[in-house]
Image (cartoon, rainbow, N blue to C red; front, side):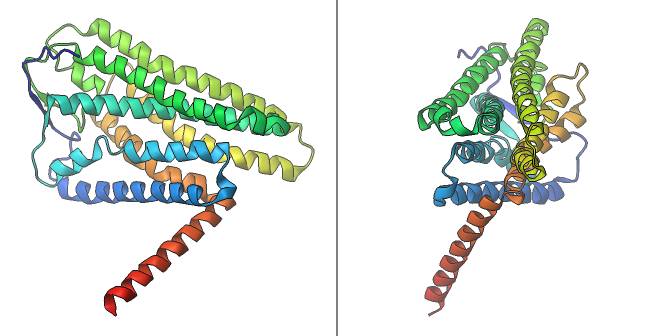
Length: 317
């Protein structure tokens, strides 16, 4: 990627209209970030340590937890750094990296939710063929495919944004480098690129959403054919967590990228929810109504508590 810019660094102005709230925001966002990391790490440990959870559904949930660990890590450390009173400057290469990894992880999650919907479709509509259709090889191909196509999409969007010259103002009116705010700083006409970016950013989530909708329409039809009330309840319960996570993921995407008239403060607020709150809630969504995950999570916490107690006794003896 060729750097045509005279600008060597950008200044992140942060969240609009939050002057004199830096300390409060620092404490709030730090708590959310730590909770996000701990929650997703515990989900990973719970799934890896329990052989009962070594199934395709939990394999993709592991991949989602990995994404939810790295996704907030794209923007949160730098945001916490300047909220604690340090420099707001970010190098040109750092800005490029932020934009690339934000869209790489975001697109990967989007594809992953689609794959998880397909997994639920196979499990409910073709239960007897589930292990054959969702074999280890197929799961590996789907997992690699989500990251591969996420990388392709992110590379396209990043190249589209940073092929423009940045030679004038370098103050980013946001808390991290993203497409809409970066295009405002470009020293060239961006109208054509904005339309292409709008189609690109909108087309990929819309395509995934339609595939998810197709999977769940088939799932609903299959569930309604189940005669027993208990059977229908159990089938719906396996999908409820995924549907909740999908709504939390897609609502910010629509509000930020697909609105004709941007609003900096609203965009920043929604983006905070997308970057920190949704990854923080995902471990709760997938564990609170799942007895197997809760059971495995309880064993992990008990084991960690036992190790902490052993270390404490060794240090105090």
